[in-house]
Each structure stands twice: as structure tokens, then as C-alpha cells.
Image (cartoon, rainbow, N blue to C red; front, side, top):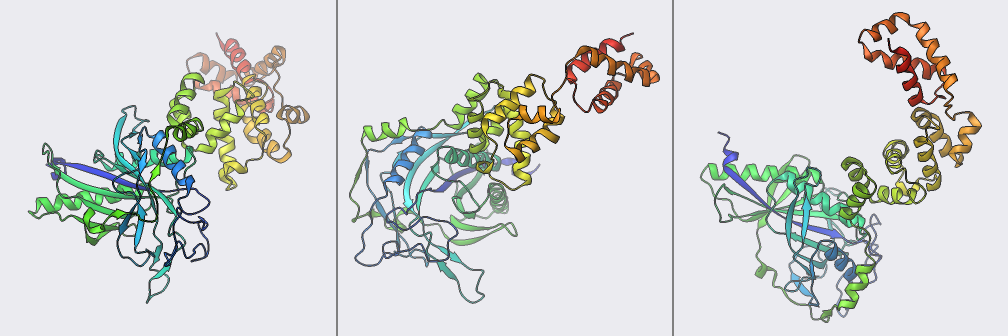
Length: 482
């Protein structure tokens, strides 16, 4: 028996969401990614003596927005705290964070939506804090370098309950977090840039055992796939320890994606090791109900609400709805286009087909797509009205729309691409193909129905796609009957 089947995996995730604010959490330094090292700093973010922090109100708004989206309770009386530790990239020697009064408590994240077996992962808390700088170890063979640009950048830390039971569930959890923060506009959720970072607290125990065993925190996980790899690696390591009669030490390990290994960073600190105490330079933050209601009134539709609208009101499939919702910009494009049409399914097909292919081929963002949404709506209605074939759309009409930024109706008329639906014309071409392939007609009538595609293809080729395929199919089948 595989010894892994005897054990149960227990995972809790700490997700750090870097916020899309123009300035840092407690000073006016720019919050920008990719700038030259140590150019987005000031005496305040570097913690020089005599400097004082000032709370960025946008951080508070983002925290409340995320809390509302995750069904959390919003804390009315908030205290800031200092988390003390010494590390080269922490210029002040402490982080301004929250300890006993996190701004959000409770709430949940729903996973496994696609599998229709939904599971709620409960949240412990969401609290506000500032980021540290960045240590760089691979540019100089003899020294570690420090870039303080990130020091003081605002973060929200989402802490889950230890209710995640597998690497797949952890992937789904992070996927939902990333999708949500993008939809509500608090972060770009880009793990490669460090806008979304994850630490995983992992333990295993024999199935049926109730007591939690020592957990190991794995840090430096920078992609959704690496989260799965790191968890699977650590679970296997812990099971091997127990199977060999060894104990698992409570510690922090670093994940190395290049060789898929973890190494010990330090023995795990407890809260008292950080010497938390109230931040003396920031007064208590009082959040009233009116302020919360103002933010609530300005909330965009959440992914779950969009899903319900797309599937119930617009009758899209699960697949189509999820494909649109996965990228906020695609959902926004869909919503703009359907202001001018009710061809919902065809609009979704156009977005996920020719539009997305065009964006991928030209390495463009959705916001760089230049065709007016009313023209896409017009194109969808032309397709639904059988005025134009899908083949002409993908190969000729859509590329021409990209070039000319014109009405698809005008372009199609100009080039003679409008489909004809004249029964007499269709019957003429149907008869021609029947006369051309008498043996194939006999085979079709003897049961080889796959030959219908051959006849259809010949007619479409002869007419250059100008005839309505639906009408061709109906007349062709009628003619081919014995």
C-alpha cells in the first residue's frame, strides 16, 4: 500500500496582495514596479530619525473592498502595530502592520467552481501591512544587493484557516484570489512581479487523527504551478520523516523553483519573537458605517455575480462564462458589446475566437484592441442572421475590420461577401455537385452519411462561401433522399 494514502494533508495559505495605489502605505513615495533600484524611496520609507508615517486612505478603501467581496466582518476600531525583526531589506527594523485588530475577520473563498463540487475555505483574517525591500543575490558573486523601492509598498495579507486538503485545492484557492483582486481593482495579481505572493503552512497527519502536527512554512513561491509543486514536495518530505520514525521540526523553508527543492531558512518564530506592540506614531483608525456603505455602493460586480448573470440571464454555457470571467478585461469587453446586441452567444464566440487569437498573435493587451464595440455587435448580428459565414468572418471580414475600422456590413457589401439565400441559386449548385459525383451520391444513399461534408465543401468552394450553409444543408439533404 502506498504510504501516502495513510496521511491527510493540511494546508493554510498566507497570501500577500500588493495594492495598486499610486503611493506607498505610509508616505508619498511612488508605488511603481520595474523602476531603477532605490529611486522610489525617501527618508520616511527608509525610517530616518524624526520622520513620521501618514496613513494612505486608498489602502483602507482597498482593504474594505476586499473584505466586502469575501463576506468578511469589517473591524470598526483598528490599531496599527509594529512587527519587529532585523533583516537587511527591512530599513526601519520593523514593519507597520496590524496584530490584534485586523481590518477584516471571517469570510470565505469558494473553490472548485468548475467541478460543480464547491467548497468554502474559511478565512481567519485580512490585515494591512507594508512590504519590505528586496534582496538580490544573483547579480554580484561576492555581495548581496538591496533594492528598497518595494519597502513601504502597501499589502493586504489574507490568512486562511487550515482547511485546504491538497495542492489542487491550494491552486484553486489562489486562482480565485487572483481573479477576485483583479475584478475589484485592488491589485493586478501578477505573481511574477510579486504583486501576489504566497506562503504555505503545511502539515500532514494520519487519517482519522484530530490533533494538528508541526507545520512547516514554505516561502518564495512565485507562481500558481509552483504552489502545487512546493506543497507536494513538502508533503512527501514530511511523510518520509514520519515513516522513518523522525519528527518534523516547526520551521521555515525556502522553495527553489529551478531545482524543485526546499531548504531550511530558520526555525519558526512565534508571535512573541516579533515583539509586537502598538504603533506609537499612528493613532487608532475608526471606520464608521457610512464609510463602509460608500465603498459598498461603488463595488463592481463580483466574478460569482457575473457568472450567474452570464449563465442565467444570457444563457451562456459554464465554459463560456468562466472563460470570460477569468480575465476581467474580457468580461468588460463582453459587457460593452452586448449594450448594442442580444446575440450573447455569438459575441462570446467572437471574443474567445478571432478577437483573442488576434490579441495573442500580435502580443496585445485587451485594452489595445481598437475595433469599436458597436461594430463587433453588428458583426455578431450578421452571423446570427446568416448574412455571412464563419469562414468569411475569420479569414476575410475580421482582418479587414482590423485594418479599416469600418462597419462590417459596409465591408462585406463592398467585397461581395454577403451570403445569398436564394433557393433557386442554391438548388442549381446542389444539382451540379450531385451530377458531378453520382457514385458518391449512391454511397451516401446506401448509408455513408459522412459524405455530406464532401458535398457541402464542394458547394462552398464553388460559391466562395457566399451561400447560406444552413440553407445549402437543408436543400442538399432533401435532394439526396432516395
